Length: 455
Image (cartoon, rainbow, N blue to C red; front, side):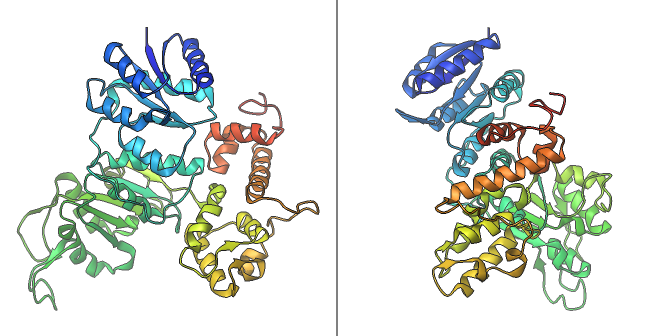
């Protein structure tokens, strides 16, 4: 019988998880803390672990790392916690967690994850964590379900040496994702070298990437190393890789295949040790309309693919992003009514546009609070802007966010005819997250409460 170790210090939650595991036909092995869990793994045969992080006698991440380093390194560990912050999510996934689920639990999802973990036990990667972590992730901010998925992918990618392709609309923060992958990887002490391929003319791009020899062309008065050489054993980030012409795609494919290249005008074979990360806001997948990237290059670049969601798909992150954008400005807060407009805006320019709007408004506010008149016309005059009802006096920011979330969910469900999977796709969130929001806000689902209108 499959044995599932449940490390949880809340008795009610521990018992509930035990009952759920028993329904699968597995044996629940309860542990009320780290000490008891350590004793059990030393004496019991364990096939899967459900692990809370904040325990009364220590940090669950300690047990995760011990399991990964010891004889239980192949046992899948599912982190099941009330804390879904970015730092803990990245650390857990980087340290080898099979998945990261947050409370309150979607029990069907949790049980499906246990079954998947048990079946895929042989596939769990167990790589040693980097010696140290950087203190922050730059401007990458968010606690939404969509961003939780990004943190998890960053953690997986950081534990790997595989090439990563980051896709998403302009302004979503693709370079920040690339920097986070580098910063949390074992290459974090080596250079991170970024090249915007769209910003350089094709005549200079080859020299910029691969370097050139003296006399290779007019003006080449000395040998010059390229960005690939400068990256050394670190990371080379190729932004807007979809803009590469055919000849350079062929040369990049060779680098990805065996690491080899030559400087422009030279015949010496050089070998790169850099890891390649790339990004594009254009069509890059085989068969997509307008795609100019070679199929074989795509498959080499996208061993791991991270799609960064647009801001409109993670509106609950807007207050956090606003607070981040206010840092270093004269303004200290945004009025409730102004926040309502920010929550309702479409943000075609994504996070980049939001930061620009906040910094501009802070410069124009003439005080410590940004109000509606300080916002640009396009944000202030948004048709679907948040509007306060007459009895809205004293509404909190949490309530304002909840009101916008509820309205967006109701509209998405109406457009999808009650199909929750389709509504979740439109909103850019997970299906389980949508279920929780429907229950939290008491939303009536058109056509019933099942996957679609038929229930």
